Image (cartoon, rainbow, N blue to C red; front, top):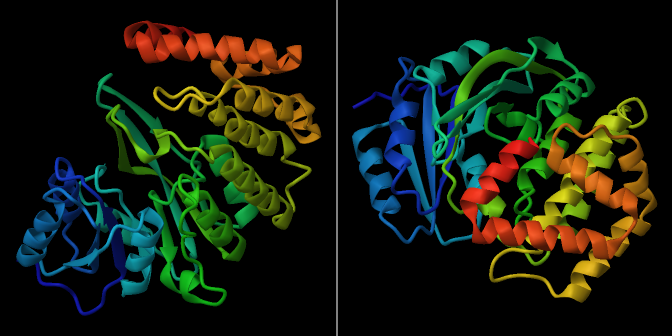
Length: 352
């Protein structure tokens, strides 16, 4: 049994919800460190599988693991429970179906400096179905300001997520307290980070990859149908606009801002054609007409260079100015995706 240190420097918060198949692998990777100056806080968010029992078993074996059992309240509330319970000078988040490098806690603790409010490192995306690994690596930037850090993270695609980031606990606890906003999924990470980066005075970017984001091709929170996705995405766009304005980079980085905002608009399209949840034609047409009439969307389109063919196709269709044409194209394409998965994978591969 690991003897827990009286001086905990790192709290690792792991929300757990029905991940019995992957939880042991996640925890074993987190425990593979030499230091004893870290704790693992497992927040069982009302799991209905054997995850609660598994959490308790690990807590019985390892002194540096604590378990919080609560009624199901969503990932935002689960992480908030972990933040409120954390005793480390810094804290971080790990999803219970992901893994980390051996010596993860050792590596993170070596990077913690007295003046860092946030530390960000790279990550690997592991696609289990394709047996592929894609690495996202950051430019080394010690003690950077928030504006410089946001530019780098937005360019590399590493801003939104809260894993692969380490936060000074005091930064979250000082008033106004920073917690996750409940019922804002799937964008609770974005809102949280916007608030943290506005408060942070010093941010270090690390040119190393410690985290493994495992994409299993299964139904995830981000890929589920959401009846209110468009309304929520507009809220997330507002947060991004406020962040850029607050950091003084709204004009100088408008193309970067535009690219991200358009990604939120584009993500609403497949949501309207989910199997078993297809929006009515009138509702789909109303969405397309609204974005075609939007001056903001027009500005973003004119200031964006799409980096993949799916987004290129979306902009081409948008510029045709026909809601009917957009609906016909995506209704056909996403029907093929839902009906012939093999064919869809071929089409998607060619469009990247």
